[in-house]
Length: 259
Image (cartoon, rainbow, N blue to C red):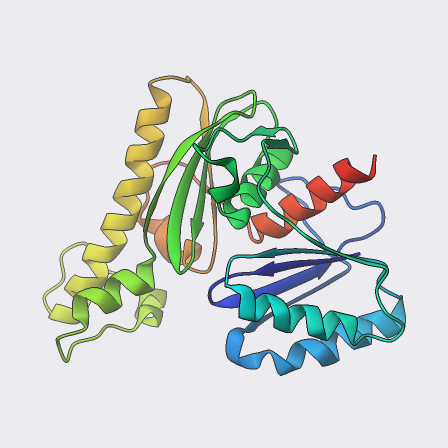
């Protein structure tokens, strides 16, 4: 099986082990890869290589990056020789993987958000959860201990927020500067922008946890996405970084459908 998470910046893929199991301490894939949109050509070679090693019989795709990218991925997959047995598209549904989808129109909940919540619940079943994906956008979603989706927040991602604030200045900060840490109160414009954006992201997450704690006494926070490692040090609450929650959710849902 091949799992694909097509996001707004990266296309990530993984091939699970036949008996794949997940825990907070152990998330290992048989094969894994990630490319940016402008590196799409690399996918054909990578997928053909793993297909040659062991034929892909089933593909499950979550795509939030538009029809053009979806069509391109479909073309790559159907070009594999011999062809995959089955290509499926993952969409949000009323209930799957232990998650009850209460979105006003369940179909409009992003497939990546839905898959991330399934993945989070697979790792921490029976817990009240805050599920954060810090990518192009930052999404913050809430789950009750019984898996009911209680709603969420969407805000600009860390990089998008910084670029938007600095677009009319000559002081555009580089997010990689955060590798060396960011002062809470900076003495130059670039650093002040980074600090402000980081604290805005952290503040939204902390407010979500605080609000969730009004209803549940034990709330766990899982943080995923490319900006997770930058945001996490600014949080004043416990939060666990888990890479590729979407792929974990895809694997969990695929196993349920197979039963």
